[in-house]
Length: 278
Image (cartoon, rainbow, N blue to C red):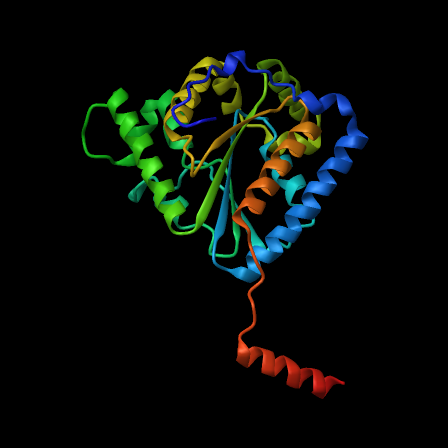
């Protein structure tokens, strides 16, 4: 999404155009992107001067967990960390809503992955404003102005990170309501997936359009040049993963990570070490 662009999620296709290529072809494409991802990540880790933050949002059952798993397979686990943000704890609510996200940002040289993120505070809470009661906020009117302030705070937060060497890429995995139904039924019918089911998923599903509207409002303000949103058609998981991996590789390549050049002292040490080992 371009900065200040408005979008109607109901009008966007949820089926990736590359889905017709078949699972085998898509698997090969993903493997190619992941291999390049690993190469670039290794260089960034060695360079240790910049960081990458990947944000994943989407409706329930949109495939966030599996996408993160597949696009990071083969990447050095020392170089990235996944943070899963569920309902905040009592302690979390003693601070600004950005606090727990700030505390898990990636260090220089590393990749941070937010599975859900600070955007829950301007989507889920906007749809369910009664949840704000537990945040212990100063008394004020909860209106459109309140949410606009929060969105501007997020833009400032992300701009600050960008100025300090963290590149941010945000993915919204866009599935259809029909596809969500299929995936939720799979969870209910497969005992190994029962742990994923949350009765709250059905309540959120009943307010589908409210959630989409909240996301649209957030995208229009927070998709910026330094922290863009990508809306990924998500009804075909293999194709969705290829698209996400391709964008990550393109972003990392644009960051131009380089292995550090040894200084004169290190070159002398290398020369001596070669002699000692010869």
